[in-house]
Image (cartoon, rainbow, N blue to C red; front, side, top):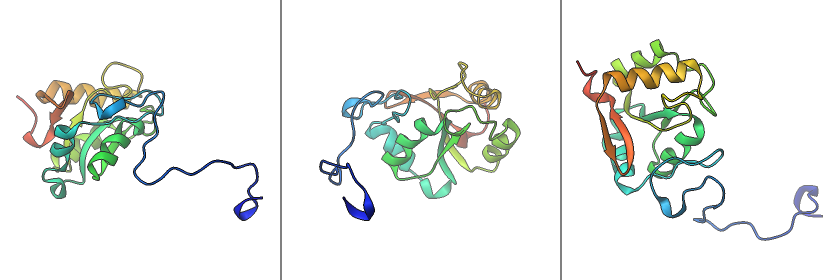
Length: 156
């Protein structure tokens, strides 16, 4: 029997600084999104952009789904909003709430390409947010990811 009555556990726990690999994980830290249960791993340029002026924002970025948000948050060490919850299907935040966060300057970037990301698959709320961002802000590419700077105000 192992610690606290655990039985059947064998092997060595991972050491600090190791990262799991496998389905959905992007090898070598390349940009882009991962598959289900595999978070995104941004490259150095996107990570640096997320960290720039991070203290000014409640969230350095927002993206559809927690799996997508997790990689950005882990790489940058800064909070990233998971629009639509775990897989982008929860109806939070609503478009009205998201618009208010943007108007209040609480979110720096929207990173396109999460589950739902304007192409279906998320909740109607997630899709509305992605579509609103795409219609009102200018897309740019940072480290291979499509990013919208929400701090610039809506495009006219």
